[in-house]
Each structure stands twice: as C-alpha cells, then as structure tokens.
Length: 239
Image 1: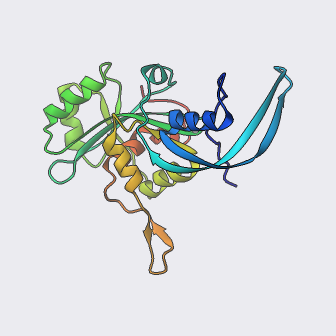
Image 2: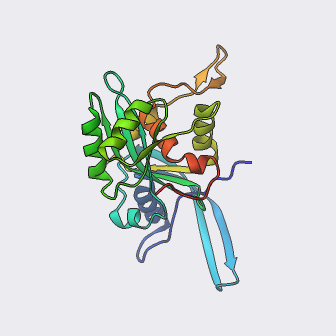
C-alpha cells in the first residue's frame, strides 16, 4: 500500500484554520490553494510526551505553484548532502545538482544546480568547485571515463557511479514510488524543476505505461547518480 504524508503544520495565534492551511501549503510546497471543504478531524494522543494533537484535514484545489526557496538554515540542517553530475556538451547540457534525502520522511530535497551546454572540463571543474567549496565527492555518469579522469587530474573529487542492468528504471521507480515527496528549490534550480514536472512515462497504443524514457532528463540523471547509495539502500553518504 502507498502511504502519503500530508503537508501541514500548526495554527498560529489569530489564524483561522483555512488561513493556516493556505499559509502552510505556501510555505511547504510553494502552492497557492483554494480550500474546497473540510474532510474531517483526527485526534492523536502522544502518551509518552503527554500531548494531544487535533488534526484538521481539508480538500484543497491547487491554483498555482510558486517557487519554493529553501533557506540556508534548512540546508545546513541536512544530515547528508549528495552531489551528482550528468555530462553533455553540444545539444545536451552538463547537469550538476546538490541534494539531500530525509530517510525518515522519504523526502528528496534539491537545492542547487549547474545546467549548461558547451562546457569545457576546466569550466566544469571551476563551476562545480564554486558550488562545492569543500570539494566533496561528486557522483558522475560512468559512461564518460575520459571526462572523469581529466576532471580528477584538474583536482575535482569525482568518480563514476556503477550502473547495473536496468539502472534507469530502478532509479526512476525509486524516485516516483518509494520517495513520498520531492522538494525542489525552483529559484535556484529552474531546470531541475522543469525536467521533473515535464517528465512522462512512455505509453503503449492503449495508453498504458510501458517504460521510462531516457530523454529530457539530464538533471534527473544527476539526481539518480547523487542518490545512488540511497536507491541501493545504503545509509552512508560519499562525502
């Protein structure tokens, strides 16, 4: 069974319930919503800490998605930061991402990117180190061993991710089914946001899903490489 954790939070002093849900959804999802109706109330008793929560549930219609801007405090509190890169040059961009994964909430956070065509290896080295000043290890597409070796010679701490059979399907299935929520900082990562929102499964003639297309997914691939240890079930980072 699929378990979904709903967005929400506490009601601030002077707020109505509808004002609170609109504010919380704006803060957590960057969404402007219209409250359709109240669904119900659930009371939770936490005996160990002697707390009683009254949870009000609402059906809302999303009017628009704004931009979610992760604060530096939020980023600093991530337990692990994972770095990934997919290589391109002419038609396809080189895509670099910084992300994190909260295992308890099964939430992926993506909060920085590089997304450019015609990047030389020196430019890749310089721009990645500008965003990765501690030179933490970057998980890269192993199909480009020459590029990885040249980046290593330039001083970038990077390695090729081992890709087993059906790795694209496995990674995308994890992102779409095992992960409950993907939070993208749309201000810092507009290309990541565009790719994730625009990605669609291939369908057969009857409209049934039949596979995961390997196109228009450069930053998505970078996220897969960055989170390879999480996808495989490891609790460790490569930092």
